[in-house]
Amino acid sequence: MLRTLMTACVLLMAAVFGTTAAADPRPTLTIGVADLPPTLEPARELSNVGTRVTYSIFDTLIRRDFLSAPDGGGAALVPGLAKSWTRVSPQELIVSLRPDVRFHNGDVFTADDVVYTFTSQRMFGDKPWMPEARTYFPSLESVEAIDPHTVRFRTRVPDVLLEQRLASWCAWIVNKRAYEALGFDGFSRAPVGTGPYKVRELRTDDRIVLDAFDDYWDGKPTARAVTFRKIPELAGRIAALQSGDVDMITNVPPDQVGILKRKPEVEVRSVVLANVHMLTFDERGVAMGDKRIRQALALAIDRQLLVDTLWDGTAVVPRSHNFPEFGAMYLPDRQTRYDPAEARRLLKEAAYKGEKITYRTMPHYYTNALKAAQVMIEMWKAVGINADLQVVENFSQMQASGAQVGNWSNSTRLPDPAGALWLTWGPGGPLQGRKAWTSVAAFNAAGTALEGETDPARRRAFFARMLDAWEDEAPGTVLYQPAEFYAVRKQVKWRPYTFYFMDLRPYNLRFE
Image 1 (spheres, helix red, strand yellow):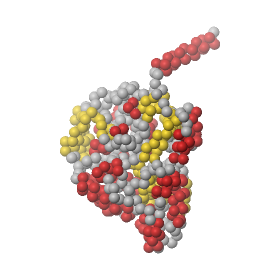
Image 2 (cartoon, helix red, strand yellow; image 1 turned 135 degrees about the vertical axis):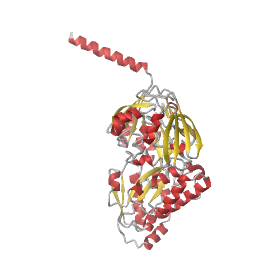
Image 3 (spheres, rainbow, N blue to C red; image 1 turned 180 degrees about the horizontal axis):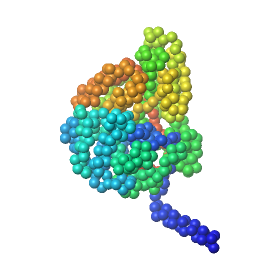
Image 4 (cartoon, helix red, strand yellow; image 1 turned 30 degrees about the vertical axis):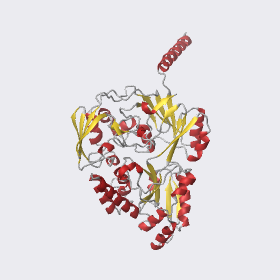
């Protein structure tokens, strides 16, 4: 009797769950990634692995229309959680909110959530929980709810980029009630947004599972669920794709593209990122206080050789920290110089005595990072620099005392120098913050002027001064804009963007 009863229960459960699955014919999507973010607070995880996941959990008031440009890097702005916005003055913006939006917990989205997102202690206050996030809104003075569906933004100086800021990093809207109930750490593990997918499971050593949020204001999600599965080794990600265990893999190096393209069930999709791989030169290190040595390190690098040999020509060497995405602010006559003879001259002029200069890198965080480091060590040795390579596990080890050179990447988070060079290398950036770069007077003066200027010609002139100061002081140097490759099963119709944002909204994800 007991066995019969247990069998009946099992059959009943199978019938119930089978009926549920059959009632939702949408497929699931599994993505093999090299790493996962430790939390899901969108303004806390400002990295490639973080924004890849959080982009589908949260929305911004205004959205950048990446699909409008053929390279996936469009700067056109379209409504998001805001249905419209109006410039009242150079320092005031009125935003009208959609009335039909709900959060994952069922709460109605209102102006109070917007005010909380931008003015609470998470980004502002005397001791903000995420001080780096505040640097994305340096001019913000106040955010005020006029009524439940209208918000006024005021800036302390004219800010021509405010609309772009509201469409970019750190502008993802959070749920006020959930945040106040859970606190900073609790919300970071169980976030509540308005995006097309909501969090079911967060196991950062293994996987993150999201479920479709069928009340999403911008259309019913096309996948029933999305799993980001951590597979650190490239060979493991490729094997999982070939076996059908995952539908897509990230961080495919260029030397594997040809092999994957020969697989009949797989497509390789790529985009040159709005991102540049960088080197940082810590002026506190041995011999690094003399800017001529830092300049020599930059001049000795043959970047085009790195692109041709490591990236099969798919990466792009930028013209300094200066990108076409800036539009009218782009300075096409700038150069990123390779001049080993000048590097040798500067070393001699600086009376460089062969002090060891150590370069630290993580092996896999940035694609081709270790291979590029090994080549650059030889380039530096060729001009007389006593260069040494150390492989470390994390950024804390990279930045610990004893090393003079590290690697980094900078994204053009706004299509303007104020959202790229100024944001990352200015007073709110990590290099100035940890005193690795202190000769900043000329750079900071030009950047501060750029930040509050509205005249296009004057803004362009201030940007040129910033670049002059940055290149002269050489706190770091650009390498190349990497190409990012994704291997995807052919039935998954999805397009990558110039950021690591993995947009899984209905307009960018469908299945055949």
